[in-house]
Every structure is written in structure tokens, then in C-alpha cells.
Length: 384
Image 1 (cartoon, rainbow, N blue to C red):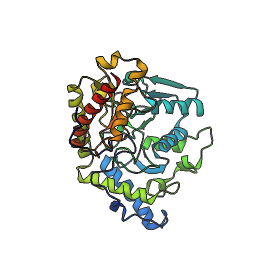
Image 2: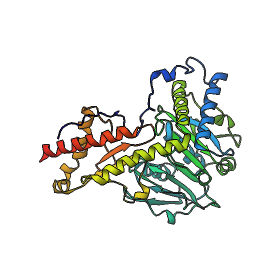
Image 3: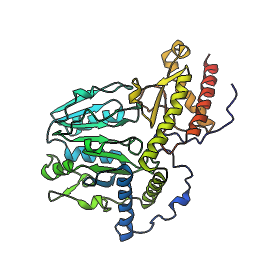
Image 4: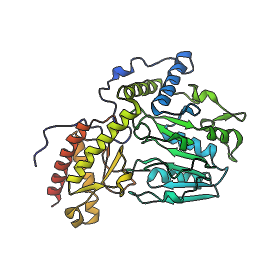
């Protein structure tokens, strides 16, 4: 099989994700470098990033939006350590990051009243069995499994517990129902392709009430503290960050937000991502050696698309050899500078993972599918 004629833009990594189309270093020319982030211009930049995030995502006015340290991980940990322990908690996991939050709650916080709802890669746990009168911790989109929750119907409007949602590969690509979410976290380097190290946390009034009326039994590191003297630290949500942010990364995030606005805001971003998924769906339907890892099409992620290799030839191989095939495909495409970082996550089943968020162009995905066919045929010929 001959190499395809069209070479796509090769950035298909699931984090950090592709920069917006047309991005260059010139986008950072207005970065506030050599100035304090606590200066008037510094705080103005940070507040602008917060306000633009709220506007594009449609966060309700009564919710708080803040920039916090250590990417999405820091934002989730801040929520777990600051809010849990007031009541029992239901922990959901169907991939590696959800499993990591269970480890933190059970082995680090060592909470007593914890119920675990787990599912294998490709599936969701039974959401109907979750009790939202307890606190609930879950990922909206399983980045390493390609499985998302299809909706929030399982979360009660009159719940007594808090819902803590890790939405890092969902925000800006999926419609998050904030009225169902009390804590929502994400990072800049996922859907909008921003730079690493900074996280975002969105708090409902119910989450703020918990923060101001409940004190955890354990000490809190400074970077996790959201209250002072029993009151929410408002500055975190107006641009006075807990620690020193990179103003270069802030400028890059602002650029990504303004680009998002230019393509139609959240609706435009969702449409771009869903169009990208449609390209991969059409290819999967027409290809006999690949399928989605997600068992239920309704749960198929439109950002971190996870694929498994199937078919008679793969089935005929020794399992250890079969597991090397997707790695060989990914390595071959990286060597050709056609696709970078599309191997499955290290803890996930052997396969491929292709980012389809809004910063990726559909035409690049169409070109990639032709290269995937070529790479698979090449590896098959090598091993046969």
C-alpha cells in the first residue's frame, strides 16, 4: 500500500492538546512579562481570563470561577481535601483518573464512608445506583477510556450531597449542566490547547456554603485553602491567585478563549468536536480492523477518542504480539511525522487514542485515517 499523498497536521495528543488553528508565538506578544501578577495590569489579565471562561462556558452568575495551581489535578485535589468528610461519598471510576481519585480518598484522606462504583475500560458504572444525597466524585469524560457520561439525569436537582466533577477533557467540548454540578474542574492544556500547570475550579453556591460551614479534620496545605476565617477567599475568583501563575501561559489561554469566541463560543466548539468525531465514526464503520473502545455509542467521547484493534488477523496473533500492533502503528506514524502521541494511555487496554477536540480540523482527521490504514497494512505485512 502506497503512502497517502496528504499529510495532516500531526498534533493529535490528548494533553497537552493541539494549539488552535493558525497559532504562532506572535499570539503571546501582549503577555505581561517582567511584571507582578499582583499588579493592577496582572490582576486585570487574570480577571479577564476568568470572565471570558465564564462567558464562553455559560457558567451561572451565582457560581464562582477561579484559577488555581497544579492543573486539573490540583483543582480536583483542592476540592477533595477541602470539601469531603462532611457526609458519605460515592466515588465513580471507569478509567485511570477516576481510579486515582478513589485512591486519594480511600488511602490518603482515609474516609470511612466511601462507596466505590467501578467499571472496566469501555463501560460506565451503574449511574442509577449512585446516591446524590451523598457527595459524589466523578469524571465527566474518561480521558483514557474514551467514555463520557451521556447526561446528568442521574443527578437529583434537590440533592443533599455535593457533586464534584473532573471535567478536564469535557469543558469547551461538551455541554456541562452546571445546575447539576457543585464543583467543576478543568485545565488549560486540554480542550483549548493551552499550556500546562494551571487549573480552573467552578463552585456552586452549595459548594461555597459547605466551605464556609465545614472544617475538615485534617490540615490543608496553603495551595488547597479556599477560605480564611470561615469565609471564601474572594480574591481567588477575581484574579488574586494563590501562587504565582505564568503570565505567558495566561496570555496563551486568553488567546485560546478569544479564538473560541471567534468560532461561535461553546456551541461552535461543540460542533467542531462533534464533526471531528463524525469523521472517525465514518472511518470506523468502513474499517474491519478497528472499533471504538466505548461499548455504548451514546457514551462515545467526542474529544479523547479511544480505539481498539479488532478483526480476524489480530485475533489470530499471540496476545502479547497483538498488544504490540497499535504501538507499532503509533510509532510508525510518529516517525513519518503524521501523528504524534496517539498510543493508548499507559494504564488503558492496548489501542489508539486520537484527540478530536475543537482545535483539531476535520480535514486533518480525514487525512489521518488514510495514514492509519497505511500504517496498519505496513505492520500487518511486517508481522505476517
